[in-house]
Structure formats: C-alpha cells, structure tokens
Length: 512
Image (tube, rainbow, N blue to C red):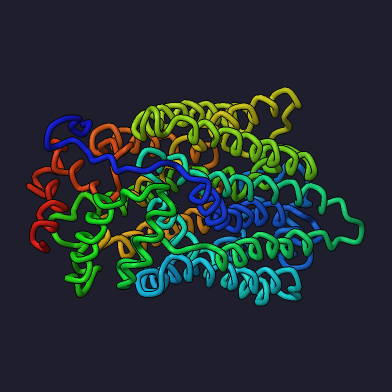
C-alpha cells in the first residue's frame, strides 16, 4: 500500500528548507487549537462543580447529592445539561459550511480571524451568564468560532509546511488542543476552590484568553501561497513561496500550484465536484476519518472526565485532579506523534494506537463491570481507582499519538486544491456531527449500557483499525499538490481514480 519510490511514480521533492518564518507562522496559526481544547476541558469540569449545577441545573444537583446507593451510571443523565455541553458542536457544524466559502473567497487567514473574534464574544457571554439561555447562546457563539477555526487552521498548516515536515507542523494544532484541555483542567481544579461559588465564571470567562491570542495572531499572519494564488495574487504568491521555502528556486512548486489553481478556476461548484467518481477516495476519507475519530470514545474521557470520575467513585476535587492527570498524559503523548509521524508514517501510528486503545477500553469495561455490575452501586478503594485511572491514561496516550492528531492531519493533506475547502468542510461537519451526537447521548448511553459502553467503543476501535490497515495508503513526504498519486497506486482506490495519479502533470501540460 506504499506509494512508489522510483521512476515516474516517485513523489517530487521541491527545493527549499524549513524556515523560522514557517515555524512561527504555524505555531501562531495552531492557537486555533487552544480555543477548541480549552472548551473541551472547561465544559466537563464546570458541569461537575456544585455551585454551577445548583444554579443552572438544580435537578442534576439534587440527584448528585442523593445517597451512595443511587445508580452511579445514571446520576448525571439530564437533557438540559447535555444540551449545554453539546450545543457548541452543532453550532460548529453549521458554521463550518459558511466558513468553507469564506476560506475559499477570502483566504485561510480571514477565516481564522473571524473565528477568534466570535469565540471571544461567546466567552464573555458565558462568563457573565445569569440563566441557561444566556449560557447556551454563549456556547453557540463559541461553536461558531470553533467551526471557523478548525475549517481553516489544518488547511493553513498543510499548505505552509514543507512536504517532509508537514506531519510535524500540522500536529502542532493537535498539541495546542491538548494544551488547551490541560490548562482548562488546571483552571477548573483551582477555581472550584474559590469561596463564594463563583469559580465557574472564571473558568468560562478565561476562554477569552485563547480567543484573544488567536484573534491577534491571525491579524499578524500571512496567507498561504495556495490561497493567494487561487485569488489571483500571482506576485504575492511567488514572494511568499520564496519566504517560506528559504530559496529562490521555487519554479517546480510554483508551477504545480498554478496547475492546481487553474483546475480550481474550472470548477464552478466544488461540492458537486467532490461527489465525482474520481474523488471517491477523498470523499470517503473526509467522511469516515472524522467520524471514526469521534467513535474512539475519547469524548467519554475528555468531555466528561470529571463527571466520569465522580461516577466511578472519586470525590469532586479528586475527579478534577484526575482530569488534570489525563490532560497531562494527552499533551505529552502528542509529542510522540510530532517526533515520529514524518519518520514512521501515518499508518504505523494509526494501527499501533488503535490496538492500544482496544486493549485499554476492554480492560476498563471489565474493571468497571467487576465493581459496579449492572446495578451501578459500589464503593471503590483508592488502589482500584488508581488502576482505573492508569488504564484511562493508557487509552488517552494512544489516542494522543494516533487518531487525535492524525484525524486532522490526514484529511487536510489529501485534498487537491479545487475541492480542498469543500472537502475540509465535510471533515468538520462529520467531526462536529458525531462530536455532537456522542456528547448528546453519552450520559444516556452510560445510564443504559453501563459498563458495556466501554466495550462498544472498543468494538468501534477494532473496526477503525481494520479500515486503516486495508484502505488508507501512506501519505508521508508527498507534496500536497502531488497527493493524487497515492490513490492511483492503491489496490482498491485505483479503480475509481484510474490515471488520476498523473492529474497534476496533465493539468500542467494542458495549460502550457
């Protein structure tokens, strides 16, 4: 399933090197991951704080304070609480469709700027909320900001990065997500201790900090050569290519960009084009990779970590500290992916991480089944709780160096320019749709399936690991505008794309 390494099938290697300018630009752009990660971490922690629950979700608070023989699987099952958590992801889904047009017409930079500013407004509303309606409106604005950001940032990173280091630079986005989650967990831990019960306002309001970082950063960022050229700015494109590649010899890469840009101009409706048979591999990957990423069960841990830890017997503060621990594991494990993705490739990390997640999920399901059974009533010892956290960390680390970063990296690097914005919107829509779906039904599923929920996600990971092994070709080291060749060389996808591997060369010769 590897791409050819010699002859006409060999990928091009453009002149140039990794420059400080590119690294800084990618680092600043990746701050879009901070706002996404901060929200993931903050919402689960806030919804485990008693002052927040008693003010906005009193029925959940009352159920939580019932005696220990209450069914632990069902104590947090509440439709309003679930709507608060999941409304952001529905808003992000819808926003990404509009962001696709903005990304294509105005560039990646303007989309990120808009996302940061809208997220900032949502953070202010949430921090000042006086009722559930105000909370949810704020969450919707946060969701619009997230939708804009995750539409534009992965594309920006893949287009700015040199092919040999695209994986590493793109995964900085996922690293920033993990940093956002970690800081949110730490903030929740300390704000929960604030006397007077207003710590939740600090937690929600501090979302403004990553929003300001992204907004100001976006103003200072340059746009990508691909985006500049698609908007007819040829001289700016050449100047930017020379600057980001650190060489005057930009001819081969510029020629491929021109060929891709000409193909883009011939496309009236990129959404309809994406449905054509020759783009079937990209369409399938843009749907299944983000969908399967959410079916790993990572949201069970990251969205509801404090709630989950409370459910299995941790106290309030202990549950928040356990979430901090998983956040640390998540962040440091992402460095493993950064260090290895361009050396070992995407497939190795996908498969190894998948196997490790399968093992961790089935062991977790067994551990919880032994103690809680189907009744959901038990007291667990400190030692037993530590073992549970250990296997949760084993699961989180596997996700953090496989499906976490690669779920964003691989889709962002496989789309040709003419369908790139539309296809990235499909990625975001399915990612957010299943994030919304899982967030909406997780507490209900925990109540109904009990420990079987972990076995369910373990089975999903078995399916997705098999899918990667059979259907996903390796993409490391291949220039983004040369990516078509991997489908023409694949045992299955070649029947759809045919001679598609030579698309770039054909376009170039047609436009001479």
